[in-house]
Image (cartoon, rainbow, N blue to C red):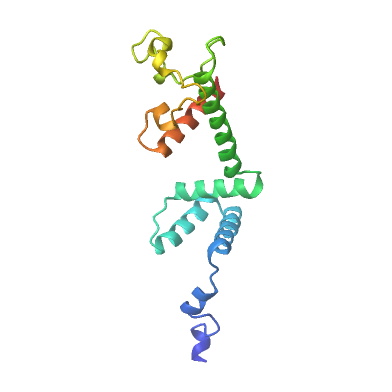
Length: 178
């Protein structure tokens, strides 16, 4: 009977930890529990409890951070959110801008100039009157060979490829806002 007073039918701490789901299942359980607590009480109570649980595992998370996590998770569960698609769209737009930039650089002189070069790379910003002043006969490609094209790092003046890709993506976003 002594066991009945101490809750003998309850699982020991190690057995309880063994039953605790891992990975994605744990994420889904915590999302569902948070939603249920939020519905029964409010989001402050749910955020406080999850924050406390995270703290016990050595993870510091504010109530506001936990609330934001739930808002993002809730949107992913209920809406058609796809960061992968956003990445593909941004990459396609960046590639299109880079291709357009390269085609402007390699177009015959008879074609009109339609450059959409970033402002910080334009001839005026570099203190030159026009881009054509920087071009001379030595820059012409040897007949039968394609001209050597700058890579993103050269175009955007970055040290790393990742930083150059980020600059290109930012440039594409700015173009889309125009």
